Length: 542
Ligand code: ADP
Ligand code: ADP
Ligand code: MG
Image (cartoon, rainbow, N blue to C red; front, side, top):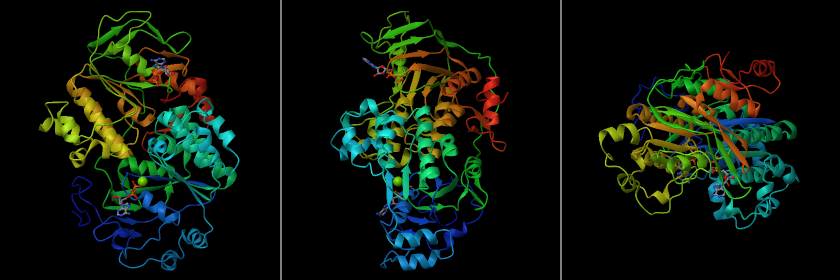
């Protein structure tokens, strides 16, 4: 190894080509002897949305505490009393000088959206309206409430909101503040794609129209690409050290990240490149059907939600991507397949064993992770289970922890592992990407894919992260309709026609990055956008 790593090589024993020069200097901050050290800081800039892309535990919050003036960075001298004069001396003549000078004059105000919105009900007791009233420093809450469609829950107690509702309330509360510097620790978890694009536009507007400085941590790369003007990549070993690079263009930053190699830093951060299917996969699906089902209809009570399902076939060992807004009937369909709900029209003469990972992963049992997982499968601890499940989901380090002590991302990984460890005909995963950082999404994606291939298992994966769907799905099931009123599920279709259906409904087109083939959202009304809409090719190159 290169001598930096505390425990084991974060790059899985790839040869590290050379040491980043940052690491031979003093860090910006070190928490103590042998404790986490942060190298480099993002540079906030007025009128700019700065993205920060990197794993959790890499020092993003540490950097924000410093930039918010809540903590004087110690430049590595953890046993001395830090002071801003010394910090400013170090950064004189750099892009940070101006910002740090303002910070020292107490001329910087900061608004922050926390990462785990699920915890807001523990900290605030009251209704949505009351929470928002407390942060409306710019007098814009009413407008934000409409744009983020919060109105239906405005008089609801905060502890009754769903994750997606909490996320939008937290965004409104943060963006309504009157600050120079906004820090948003993920804006997309639990939001569907339409809501993600709305959130991204609101953040952009605050930078463009109000000249504010926005720093956004985001793991949905399509949204990050749409949102940010420039990008710092953070790498290192989570929990041990983190390096924040100089800003890159968003395009280069994401491309280098996907390629696993940072050019300026001359640094390999992953052994393999992540690649996308530029052209639609072949249409013919060959295989053994798992089920064939007829048209179905199900409604809840009088005039409440109703779902129409187009009959179709699901094949063994395919991964079926499921896309559509929240509240459109996806979980209802799962319950019909599982036999826990009976359809009103159409009948199902099969009953599938479904292993289901719900969208919101709740744990209330005080139980160790290893105890919990070994109660689910006899394979627990076998080399096959370790290779296919524990390793890609990075469970080794958390096996001895209590379920109740896990972070959102850790809980998500345990829940995915629990789902895949069950013996079932159909694995249904509802938003597995939530709370995972980009690297974990990539790993979880390949674990799910490999699992389906090796076990003749069929997986249905509901996710709103287009990159994840692209990397995972063989075919698509598209839901449309009016959330909370009526929903319609298409038959499973090939990726091209599925993406076209789905994106036409959202009025969004994608182009391909020339270097990596990754999908990028087109600017509305750009020439490409209009041309692709005219041809009806919303996603794959014609
Ligand atoms: P991120 O925001 O990227 O998830 P953080 O900045 O919160 O990362 O934390 C980076 C590392 O620093 C973590 O390993 C964390 O445990 C450690 N850390 C954070 N705060 C302290 C502290 N006050 N004392 C010691 N270590 C800390
Ligand atoms: P999705 O999984 O796409 O988010 P769901 O299938 O969970 O959607 O729910 C679709 C709609 O049906 C929502 O408006 C939800 O509130 C409503 N709904 C779900 N279960 C019931 C129920 N048991 N009784 C009445 N309405 C329900
Ligand atoms: Mg953090």
